[in-house]
Length: 450
Image (tube, rainbow, N blue to C red; front, side):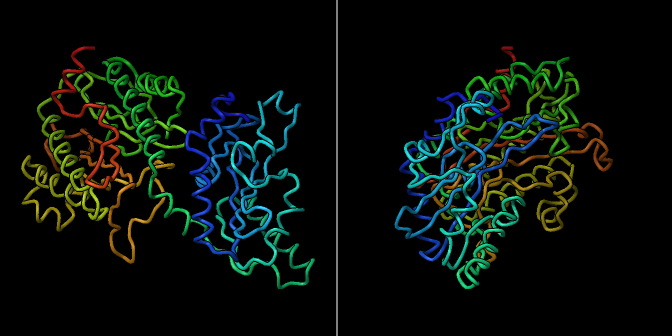
Protein backbone atom coordinates (compact mmCIF):
# COMPACT_ATOMS: atom_id res chain seq x y z
CA UNK A 1 0.00 0.00 0.00
CA UNK A 2 1.35 3.42 -0.91
CA UNK A 3 1.57 6.10 1.76
CA UNK A 4 3.49 6.24 5.03
CA UNK A 5 6.10 3.46 5.34
CA UNK A 6 4.34 0.18 5.96
CA UNK A 7 6.91 -2.01 7.69
CA UNK A 8 5.57 -5.09 9.50
CA UNK A 9 6.00 -3.47 12.92
CA UNK A 10 4.17 -0.34 11.70
CA UNK A 11 1.32 -2.40 10.22
CA UNK A 12 0.58 -4.04 13.55
CA UNK A 13 0.77 -0.85 15.57
CA UNK A 14 -2.99 -0.62 15.06
CA UNK A 15 -3.21 -3.56 17.45
CA UNK A 16 -1.72 -1.52 20.28
CA UNK A 17 -5.40 -1.55 21.15
CA UNK A 18 -6.00 -5.20 21.94
CA UNK A 19 -8.06 -7.38 19.62
CA UNK A 20 -10.42 -7.98 22.53
CA UNK A 21 -11.36 -4.29 22.59
CA UNK A 22 -12.16 -4.23 18.87
CA UNK A 23 -14.28 -7.35 19.42
CA UNK A 24 -16.09 -5.70 22.34
CA UNK A 25 -16.91 -2.68 20.18
CA UNK A 26 -18.32 -4.88 17.43
CA UNK A 27 -20.45 -6.87 19.89
CA UNK A 28 -21.80 -3.71 21.48
CA UNK A 29 -22.70 -2.23 18.11
CA UNK A 30 -24.42 -5.42 16.92
CA UNK A 31 -26.43 -5.57 20.15
CA UNK A 32 -27.60 -2.01 19.57
CA UNK A 33 -28.55 -2.76 15.95
CA UNK A 34 -30.52 -5.95 16.66
CA UNK A 35 -30.48 -9.50 15.27
CA UNK A 36 -32.40 -8.59 12.11
CA UNK A 37 -29.81 -6.01 10.97
CA UNK A 38 -26.71 -6.06 8.84
CA UNK A 39 -23.97 -3.48 9.36
CA UNK A 40 -21.66 -2.69 6.46
CA UNK A 41 -18.67 -0.36 6.45
CA UNK A 42 -16.01 0.11 3.81
CA UNK A 43 -12.36 0.94 4.29
CA UNK A 44 -11.20 4.30 3.04
CA UNK A 45 -10.26 4.23 -0.64
CA UNK A 46 -6.82 5.21 -1.80
CA UNK A 47 -6.96 8.86 -2.86
CA UNK A 48 -4.83 10.19 -5.66
CA UNK A 49 -2.80 13.37 -5.29
CA UNK A 50 -2.03 13.70 -8.97
CA UNK A 51 -1.37 11.36 -11.92
CA UNK A 52 -0.36 8.05 -10.34
CA UNK A 53 0.85 9.50 -7.00
CA UNK A 54 -1.37 8.72 -4.02
CA UNK A 55 -1.85 10.72 -0.86
CA UNK A 56 -0.49 9.02 2.27
CA UNK A 57 -3.10 6.42 3.14
CA UNK A 58 -5.23 6.99 6.20
CA UNK A 59 -7.87 4.48 7.23
CA UNK A 60 -11.53 5.51 7.66
CA UNK A 61 -11.99 6.31 11.35
CA UNK A 62 -15.14 4.24 11.80
CA UNK A 63 -13.62 1.27 9.97
CA UNK A 64 -10.52 1.51 12.15
CA UNK A 65 -12.63 1.76 15.30
CA UNK A 66 -14.35 -1.53 14.51
CA UNK A 67 -11.62 -3.51 12.77
CA UNK A 68 -8.17 -2.06 13.46
CA UNK A 69 -7.39 -3.15 9.92
CA UNK A 70 -4.98 -0.78 8.11
CA UNK A 71 -5.55 -1.55 4.43
CA UNK A 72 -7.74 -0.19 1.67
CA UNK A 73 -9.97 -2.37 -0.57
CA UNK A 74 -11.80 -3.91 2.38
CA UNK A 75 -15.38 -4.16 3.64
CA UNK A 76 -16.43 -5.17 7.14
CA UNK A 77 -19.79 -6.92 7.50
CA UNK A 78 -21.33 -7.35 10.94
CA UNK A 79 -24.11 -9.93 10.80
CA UNK A 80 -25.72 -10.45 14.23
CA UNK A 81 -26.76 -14.04 14.81
CA UNK A 82 -25.06 -15.54 11.75
CA UNK A 83 -24.25 -19.15 12.63
CA UNK A 84 -21.01 -19.30 10.68
CA UNK A 85 -19.61 -16.14 12.23
CA UNK A 86 -20.98 -12.68 12.84
CA UNK A 87 -17.85 -10.71 11.87
CA UNK A 88 -16.81 -11.05 8.24
CA UNK A 89 -14.06 -9.13 6.47
CA UNK A 90 -13.62 -8.88 2.72
CA UNK A 91 -10.05 -7.88 1.89
CA UNK A 92 -7.30 -8.27 -0.67
CA UNK A 93 -5.65 -11.63 -1.15
CA UNK A 94 -1.91 -12.11 -0.94
CA UNK A 95 -0.33 -11.30 -4.31
CA UNK A 96 3.43 -11.69 -4.74
CA UNK A 97 3.63 -9.41 -7.76
CA UNK A 98 1.66 -6.60 -6.13
CA UNK A 99 3.58 -7.00 -2.89
CA UNK A 100 6.84 -6.66 -4.78
CA UNK A 101 5.82 -3.12 -5.71
CA UNK A 102 3.68 -1.96 -2.79
CA UNK A 103 4.61 -4.06 0.22
CA UNK A 104 3.10 -6.87 2.21
CA UNK A 105 -0.66 -7.55 2.12
CA UNK A 106 -2.38 -9.02 5.16
CA UNK A 107 -4.59 -11.47 3.26
CA UNK A 108 -7.64 -13.40 4.38
CA UNK A 109 -5.88 -15.94 6.62
CA UNK A 110 -4.10 -13.30 8.70
CA UNK A 111 -7.25 -11.17 8.81
CA UNK A 112 -8.75 -13.96 10.90
CA UNK A 113 -5.62 -14.90 12.84
CA UNK A 114 -4.28 -11.41 13.59
CA UNK A 115 -7.37 -9.20 13.57
CA UNK A 116 -9.96 -11.42 15.23
CA UNK A 117 -12.38 -11.79 12.33
CA UNK A 118 -14.73 -14.79 12.36
CA UNK A 119 -14.30 -15.22 8.63
CA UNK A 120 -12.60 -13.47 5.73
CA UNK A 121 -13.09 -13.64 1.96
CA UNK A 122 -11.32 -12.08 -1.04
CA UNK A 123 -12.65 -8.63 -1.83
CA UNK A 124 -12.93 -9.66 -5.49
CA UNK A 125 -15.63 -12.18 -4.48
CA UNK A 126 -17.79 -9.77 -2.50
CA UNK A 127 -20.45 -9.39 -5.22
CA UNK A 128 -21.04 -13.13 -5.20
CA UNK A 129 -20.95 -13.68 -1.44
CA UNK A 130 -22.26 -10.66 0.47
CA UNK A 131 -25.76 -10.40 -1.06
CA UNK A 132 -26.59 -13.86 0.28
CA UNK A 133 -25.35 -12.87 3.73
CA UNK A 134 -27.69 -9.90 4.01
CA UNK A 135 -30.67 -11.67 2.42
CA UNK A 136 -33.69 -11.69 4.70
CA UNK A 137 -32.42 -9.04 7.09
CA UNK A 138 -34.73 -6.11 7.79
CA UNK A 139 -32.24 -3.24 7.94
CA UNK A 140 -28.82 -2.29 6.65
CA UNK A 141 -26.76 0.15 8.69
CA UNK A 142 -24.20 1.95 6.55
CA UNK A 143 -22.67 5.32 5.74
CA UNK A 144 -24.87 5.98 2.74
CA UNK A 145 -23.67 9.05 0.84
CA UNK A 146 -20.07 9.00 2.05
CA UNK A 147 -18.42 7.05 -0.79
CA UNK A 148 -20.35 7.03 -4.11
CA UNK A 149 -18.56 3.91 -5.39
CA UNK A 150 -19.59 1.87 -2.35
CA UNK A 151 -23.12 3.27 -2.50
CA UNK A 152 -23.42 2.07 -6.10
CA UNK A 153 -22.11 -1.35 -5.15
CA UNK A 154 -24.60 -1.61 -2.30
CA UNK A 155 -27.49 -0.67 -4.57
CA UNK A 156 -26.31 -3.34 -6.99
CA UNK A 157 -26.54 -5.98 -4.26
CA UNK A 158 -30.07 -4.88 -3.44
CA UNK A 159 -31.14 -5.12 -7.11
CA UNK A 160 -29.59 -8.56 -7.39
CA UNK A 161 -31.52 -9.83 -4.37
CA UNK A 162 -34.82 -8.52 -5.71
CA UNK A 163 -34.25 -9.90 -9.18
CA UNK A 164 -33.07 -13.34 -8.11
CA UNK A 165 -35.73 -13.93 -5.52
CA UNK A 166 -38.66 -12.02 -6.91
CA UNK A 167 -38.60 -9.39 -4.20
CA UNK A 168 -39.50 -9.50 -0.55
CA UNK A 169 -36.18 -10.69 0.90
CA UNK A 170 -33.96 -7.67 0.37
CA UNK A 171 -33.59 -5.32 3.36
CA UNK A 172 -36.30 -2.68 3.25
CA UNK A 173 -34.60 -0.04 5.36
CA UNK A 174 -31.28 1.79 5.23
CA UNK A 175 -30.20 3.39 8.50
CA UNK A 176 -27.33 5.82 9.07
CA UNK A 177 -24.63 3.89 10.90
CA UNK A 178 -23.41 7.03 12.62
CA UNK A 179 -26.50 7.21 14.83
CA UNK A 180 -25.25 4.18 16.75
CA UNK A 181 -21.53 4.08 16.14
CA UNK A 182 -20.64 7.69 16.81
CA UNK A 183 -22.12 7.64 20.29
CA UNK A 184 -19.85 4.70 21.11
CA UNK A 185 -16.80 6.54 19.82
CA UNK A 186 -17.50 9.50 22.09
CA UNK A 187 -16.44 7.53 25.19
CA UNK A 188 -12.74 6.71 25.17
CA UNK A 189 -11.45 3.53 26.77
CA UNK A 190 -8.33 3.29 28.91
CA UNK A 191 -6.28 2.18 25.89
CA UNK A 192 -7.68 4.97 23.72
CA UNK A 193 -6.75 7.54 26.35
CA UNK A 194 -3.26 6.04 26.53
CA UNK A 195 -2.85 6.57 22.78
CA UNK A 196 -4.20 10.11 23.05
CA UNK A 197 -1.71 10.90 25.84
CA UNK A 198 1.03 9.63 23.55
CA UNK A 199 -0.26 11.75 20.64
CA UNK A 200 -0.35 14.78 22.91
CA UNK A 201 3.18 14.11 24.18
CA UNK A 202 4.52 13.86 20.62
CA UNK A 203 2.76 17.08 19.64
CA UNK A 204 4.06 18.78 22.79
CA UNK A 205 7.63 17.93 21.81
CA UNK A 206 6.94 19.27 18.32
CA UNK A 207 5.68 22.56 19.77
CA UNK A 208 8.80 22.86 21.92
CA UNK A 209 10.96 22.27 18.86
CA UNK A 210 9.05 25.00 17.05
CA UNK A 211 9.54 27.44 19.92
CA UNK A 212 13.28 26.78 19.90
CA UNK A 213 13.51 27.25 16.15
CA UNK A 214 11.18 30.22 15.56
CA UNK A 215 13.63 33.11 15.45
CA UNK A 216 13.48 36.31 13.39
CA UNK A 217 14.45 35.81 9.76
CA UNK A 218 13.33 32.21 9.47
CA UNK A 219 10.27 31.34 7.43
CA UNK A 220 7.03 29.84 8.66
CA UNK A 221 7.63 26.75 6.56
CA UNK A 222 10.98 26.19 8.28
CA UNK A 223 9.21 26.11 11.64
CA UNK A 224 6.62 23.79 10.11
CA UNK A 225 9.51 21.53 9.09
CA UNK A 226 10.69 21.44 12.72
CA UNK A 227 7.20 20.34 13.75
CA UNK A 228 6.89 17.67 11.09
CA UNK A 229 10.39 16.33 11.73
CA UNK A 230 9.62 15.83 15.42
CA UNK A 231 6.28 14.14 14.73
CA UNK A 232 7.69 11.78 12.11
CA UNK A 233 10.74 11.01 14.25
CA UNK A 234 8.36 9.41 16.72
CA UNK A 235 6.64 7.32 14.04
CA UNK A 236 3.53 9.51 14.17
CA UNK A 237 1.94 11.64 11.46
CA UNK A 238 0.43 15.14 11.68
CA UNK A 239 -3.24 15.01 12.61
CA UNK A 240 -3.88 18.00 10.29
CA UNK A 241 -1.75 20.44 8.27
CA UNK A 242 -0.01 22.63 10.86
CA UNK A 243 -0.95 26.30 11.17
CA UNK A 244 2.21 28.41 11.54
CA UNK A 245 0.96 31.99 11.45
CA UNK A 246 3.21 34.93 12.22
CA UNK A 247 1.97 38.44 12.98
CA UNK A 248 -1.36 39.50 11.52
CA UNK A 249 -1.66 36.18 9.66
CA UNK A 250 -2.70 34.68 13.00
CA UNK A 251 -5.99 36.55 12.63
CA UNK A 252 -6.87 34.19 9.76
CA UNK A 253 -8.40 31.30 11.67
CA UNK A 254 -7.31 28.54 9.29
CA UNK A 255 -4.15 30.02 7.81
CA UNK A 256 -2.10 27.20 6.26
CA UNK A 257 0.06 28.92 3.62
CA UNK A 258 3.04 28.97 6.02
CA UNK A 259 5.18 30.92 3.53
CA UNK A 260 6.03 34.24 5.21
CA UNK A 261 9.19 35.29 7.07
CA UNK A 262 9.14 35.71 10.84
CA UNK A 263 9.79 39.21 12.15
CA UNK A 264 11.02 40.47 15.49
CA UNK A 265 8.18 42.05 17.46
CA UNK A 266 5.52 39.70 16.03
CA UNK A 267 3.74 36.85 17.71
CA UNK A 268 3.73 33.37 16.19
CA UNK A 269 0.58 31.28 16.51
CA UNK A 270 1.11 27.54 16.03
CA UNK A 271 -1.79 25.10 15.89
CA UNK A 272 -0.46 21.58 15.36
CA UNK A 273 -1.18 18.03 16.45
CA UNK A 274 0.14 14.51 16.09
CA UNK A 275 -1.72 11.33 15.23
CA UNK A 276 -0.70 8.01 16.78
CA UNK A 277 -2.47 4.86 15.55
CA UNK A 278 -5.21 7.11 14.16
CA UNK A 279 -5.77 8.96 17.48
CA UNK A 280 -5.26 12.71 17.35
CA UNK A 281 -3.96 15.55 19.44
CA UNK A 282 -4.59 19.26 18.79
CA UNK A 283 -2.53 21.93 20.56
CA UNK A 284 -2.15 25.69 20.02
CA UNK A 285 0.36 28.10 21.49
CA UNK A 286 1.18 31.75 20.73
CA UNK A 287 4.58 33.20 21.59
CA UNK A 288 6.83 36.16 20.67
CA UNK A 289 9.27 35.54 17.84
CA UNK A 290 11.80 37.92 19.40
CA UNK A 291 11.54 36.34 22.83
CA UNK A 292 9.46 38.88 24.76
CA UNK A 293 5.82 39.95 24.56
CA UNK A 294 5.11 43.63 23.98
CA UNK A 295 2.84 45.36 26.49
CA UNK A 296 -0.22 45.01 24.25
CA UNK A 297 0.60 41.43 23.29
CA UNK A 298 1.06 40.47 26.93
CA UNK A 299 -2.18 42.15 27.97
CA UNK A 300 -4.25 40.28 25.38
CA UNK A 301 -2.37 37.05 26.00
CA UNK A 302 -3.16 37.15 29.70
CA UNK A 303 -6.86 37.66 28.93
CA UNK A 304 -6.86 34.59 26.69
CA UNK A 305 -4.90 32.52 29.23
CA UNK A 306 -7.26 33.51 32.05
CA UNK A 307 -10.21 32.58 29.86
CA UNK A 308 -8.66 29.23 28.96
CA UNK A 309 -7.86 28.29 32.55
CA UNK A 310 -11.39 29.22 33.62
CA UNK A 311 -12.84 27.21 30.73
CA UNK A 312 -10.75 24.14 31.57
CA UNK A 313 -12.12 24.30 35.12
CA UNK A 314 -15.60 23.80 33.61
CA UNK A 315 -14.59 20.47 32.03
CA UNK A 316 -15.94 18.01 34.57
CA UNK A 317 -18.68 15.37 34.77
CA UNK A 318 -22.22 16.71 34.81
CA UNK A 319 -21.37 20.08 33.29
CA UNK A 320 -22.83 21.02 29.89
CA UNK A 321 -20.41 20.84 26.98
CA UNK A 322 -20.85 24.56 26.31
CA UNK A 323 -20.15 25.66 29.90
CA UNK A 324 -16.49 26.18 28.99
CA UNK A 325 -17.47 28.40 26.07
CA UNK A 326 -19.75 30.60 28.14
CA UNK A 327 -17.09 31.09 30.80
CA UNK A 328 -14.50 31.96 28.15
CA UNK A 329 -16.87 34.50 26.59
CA UNK A 330 -17.37 36.16 29.97
CA UNK A 331 -13.65 36.43 30.75
CA UNK A 332 -12.74 37.66 27.26
CA UNK A 333 -15.56 40.21 27.16
CA UNK A 334 -14.51 41.57 30.55
CA UNK A 335 -10.89 41.73 29.44
CA UNK A 336 -11.64 43.48 26.15
CA UNK A 337 -13.80 46.04 27.92
CA UNK A 338 -11.14 46.66 30.57
CA UNK A 339 -8.51 47.22 27.86
CA UNK A 340 -10.78 49.55 25.90
CA UNK A 341 -11.18 47.39 22.79
CA UNK A 342 -14.90 47.13 23.49
CA UNK A 343 -17.10 49.97 24.68
CA UNK A 344 -19.44 49.63 27.61
CA UNK A 345 -19.51 46.71 30.00
CA UNK A 346 -19.17 42.97 29.54
CA UNK A 347 -22.89 42.29 30.04
CA UNK A 348 -23.86 44.46 27.08
CA UNK A 349 -20.94 43.16 24.95
CA UNK A 350 -22.16 39.61 25.52
CA UNK A 351 -25.87 40.36 25.12
CA UNK A 352 -25.27 42.24 21.86
CA UNK A 353 -22.66 39.79 20.59
CA UNK A 354 -20.06 42.54 20.16
CA UNK A 355 -17.32 40.33 21.60
CA UNK A 356 -17.51 38.27 18.38
CA UNK A 357 -15.55 41.00 16.59
CA UNK A 358 -12.50 39.61 18.36
CA UNK A 359 -13.63 36.13 19.48
CA UNK A 360 -15.65 34.72 16.56
CA UNK A 361 -15.02 31.01 17.21
CA UNK A 362 -16.22 28.38 19.63
CA UNK A 363 -14.08 27.31 22.55
CA UNK A 364 -13.66 23.62 21.73
CA UNK A 365 -14.75 20.41 20.08
CA UNK A 366 -14.68 16.66 20.62
CA UNK A 367 -11.32 14.98 20.02
CA UNK A 368 -10.47 11.37 19.24
CA UNK A 369 -9.98 9.42 16.03
CA UNK A 370 -10.85 12.64 14.22
CA UNK A 371 -9.51 16.05 15.20
CA UNK A 372 -13.08 17.33 15.13
CA UNK A 373 -14.40 14.06 16.46
CA UNK A 374 -17.86 12.58 16.11
CA UNK A 375 -20.61 12.90 18.72
CA UNK A 376 -23.67 15.07 19.25
CA UNK A 377 -23.15 18.34 21.06
CA UNK A 378 -26.85 18.63 21.94
CA UNK A 379 -29.37 16.03 23.10
CA UNK A 380 -33.07 16.84 22.64
CA UNK A 381 -32.13 20.46 22.05
CA UNK A 382 -30.10 20.80 25.24
CA UNK A 383 -26.29 20.93 25.55
CA UNK A 384 -24.83 17.49 26.13
CA UNK A 385 -23.57 16.83 29.66
CA UNK A 386 -19.95 15.80 29.98
CA UNK A 387 -19.18 12.28 31.18
CA UNK A 388 -15.97 10.42 32.04
CA UNK A 389 -14.13 9.22 28.94
CA UNK A 390 -15.05 12.16 26.75
CA UNK A 391 -12.18 14.29 25.41
CA UNK A 392 -12.53 17.92 24.37
CA UNK A 393 -10.29 20.75 23.24
CA UNK A 394 -10.36 24.07 25.06
CA UNK A 395 -9.17 26.86 22.74
CA UNK A 396 -10.34 30.43 23.34
CA UNK A 397 -8.67 33.21 21.39
CA UNK A 398 -8.57 36.90 20.61
CA UNK A 399 -8.05 38.03 17.03
CA UNK A 400 -7.76 41.74 16.20
CA UNK A 401 -7.70 42.01 12.39
CA UNK A 402 -5.04 44.33 10.93
CA UNK A 403 -7.75 46.41 9.22
CA UNK A 404 -9.82 46.83 12.40
CA UNK A 405 -10.17 50.61 12.46
CA UNK A 406 -12.35 50.66 15.55
CA UNK A 407 -9.39 50.18 17.92
CA UNK A 408 -6.06 51.99 18.36
CA UNK A 409 -3.39 50.86 15.91
CA UNK A 410 -1.21 49.33 18.62
CA UNK A 411 -3.75 46.50 19.06
CA UNK A 412 -4.21 45.70 15.39
CA UNK A 413 -2.88 42.52 13.84
CA UNK A 414 -2.57 40.59 17.11
CA UNK A 415 -3.94 37.04 16.99
CA UNK A 416 -3.71 34.73 20.02
CA UNK A 417 -5.01 31.21 20.60
CA UNK A 418 -4.21 28.83 23.45
CA UNK A 419 -5.49 25.27 23.06
CA UNK A 420 -5.20 22.12 25.14
CA UNK A 421 -6.63 18.60 24.98
CA UNK A 422 -8.69 17.78 28.07
CA UNK A 423 -10.11 14.40 29.11
CA UNK A 424 -13.12 14.21 31.41
CA UNK A 425 -12.35 12.01 34.43
CA UNK A 426 -14.54 10.69 37.25
CA UNK A 427 -13.39 13.49 39.54
CA UNK A 428 -12.81 16.32 37.09
CA UNK A 429 -10.42 16.47 34.16
CA UNK A 430 -6.92 15.67 32.93
CA UNK A 431 -5.02 18.05 30.63
CA UNK A 432 -3.36 15.67 28.17
CA UNK A 433 -1.26 18.41 26.56
CA UNK A 434 0.26 19.94 29.68
CA UNK A 435 3.77 19.34 28.33
CA UNK A 436 3.84 22.69 26.51
CA UNK A 437 4.24 25.79 28.69
CA UNK A 438 1.65 28.53 28.34
CA UNK A 439 2.41 30.86 31.23
CA UNK A 440 3.94 33.93 29.54
CA UNK A 441 6.84 34.09 31.98
CA UNK A 442 7.68 30.42 31.40
CA UNK A 443 7.49 30.92 27.64
CA UNK A 444 9.82 33.92 27.76
CA UNK A 445 12.26 31.95 29.92
CA UNK A 446 12.22 29.08 27.46
CA UNK A 447 12.79 31.41 24.52
CA UNK A 448 15.63 33.15 26.31
CA UNK A 449 17.56 29.89 26.28
CA UNK A 450 17.51 29.52 22.49
